[in-house]
Image (cartoon, rainbow, N blue to C red; front, top):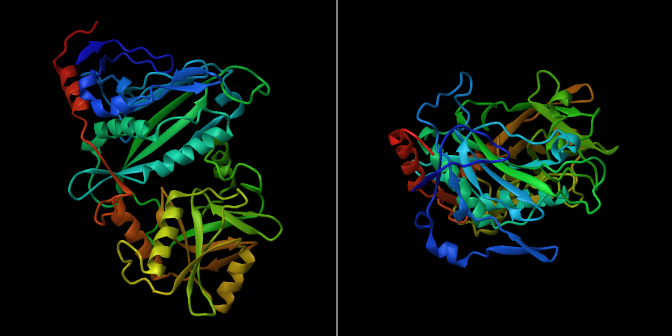
Length: 435
């Protein structure tokens, strides 16, 4: 490795840096990369994992009290309209620095993703359908006029190296994981509406935090969480930004949530249609007249509901189960199941509870995975939702894939061991001075 000093306009740290020499990166990948892309008629730099600078923690590094769960490292990648993606850097977790006139501070021009890394029983690290998150990340970025052109394989390579550095800290037990937060924000300065609607400068960064298995919500087979069906505030509306993972969509959640409830169940229109709950998509389980068990969730057509990765996965698993084409069976799930994507209102939920056709309700998302909904407060009345064993079956299927107990290769990405990172950290221990 070549030892050098790494400077960034966005992250400052006194720790040394180590630049990875080309031999540490797959030469085949480097040869097939498209090095530049065309933007506004001129060539700009694409995102390249082979350009990574790694800045190891100093041997004197100490974790601040109360921050033991924070990831030790972060990934930063600057971008500019003039030159494209800058050099990716993995270095110690640190503060960011940009102008108070930047778009992220003045107009909340930022989007993010939520992902998790799990350690399998065999000890390898697993990411669940990461390309789905990256595609949604691009879609959110495009809605904000942020850069949305990058090679997902390059970003996954960089993310894998960041995650590999935290691997020793990730426990194997169920419930434990490394939460991953990719974020993209505008650092361009200025007030008012941009002439061409696009940012001229931006920053992508990824940070992590360790979840040691604390249960934020009851289990899928337990009593379930309590929701307050919010009629005072509206999260999203047709043609708005509800289907994008923007920072501004989540900043108002805490004020709307009422004490004693896990989160708000967001409604819209005079019919009190359900959009989603807090940070998760919602399904109801209903018995149809033809004997089928229906899993009903809101459609994506009107742009109100976030297209959740867990939501999409559950829909696909249920459809495969119904068609008899599942790569693995959902043991105990009724054969005659049907997925329905359509508008779903709270009056329909109440009616289903009253006539007994509604037999369960659950939420799903990266944070909760799959969780039962046990009670809903709606217009002054508290409704109890019956538990349904199918909810635990779905949770077990999803977590089984996430942790490698169920092999589904196209959904589970094994994070490669990064020998360069381990070598870099060892080198720091032996270095006495840096240029």
